[in-house]
Image 1 (cartoon, one colour):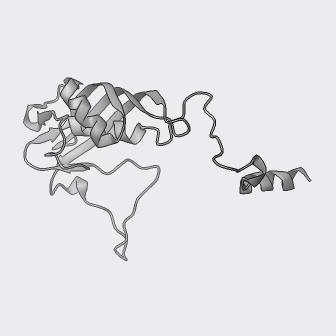
Image 2 (cartoon, helix red, strand yellow; image 1 turned 135 degrees about the horizontal axis):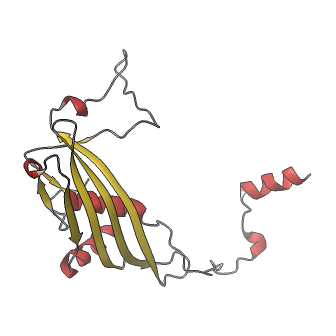
Image 3 (tube, one colour; image 1 turned 45 degrees about the horizontal axis):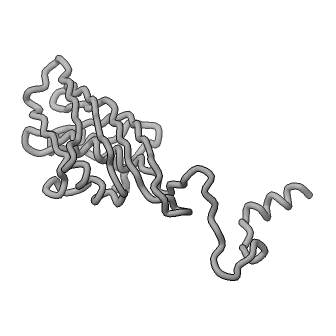
Length: 182
């Protein structure tokens, strides 16, 4: 997680204002925030960021953040270095509990090793004070969804120098495929 001081897409929600009735929050990044996001994320441009969230009480002191975040970004194609547009549409779900809550304790076995279930729910995140930054939550979901190897449709990696297709080392999986056919 980034330090909140570096993070510009910030929207603090006072946990005390969340009652039994859900609180709906809509966020939209302005131009300054989008420019800062593009720099932090290492992409060419962030054209839009919008989130629609619902915050509910969870257990006694916790908060559930649930909703959807959408973004449109541009980054360089890994093959041609030309701009590639990408649309991100992610469901957001996160749980928060106050620091020191029993719900945030990590379960351990008799050897002190953490017990984590792959199918089980995620551990709640903790917050200090009485606010949660839902803008930061949205940024995290977007960053995790960005394609690390964007490729323009139809882009082909060209060999450099005197290399020929015969010089390219075949994939080990291609070799296995050949064995399979025998």
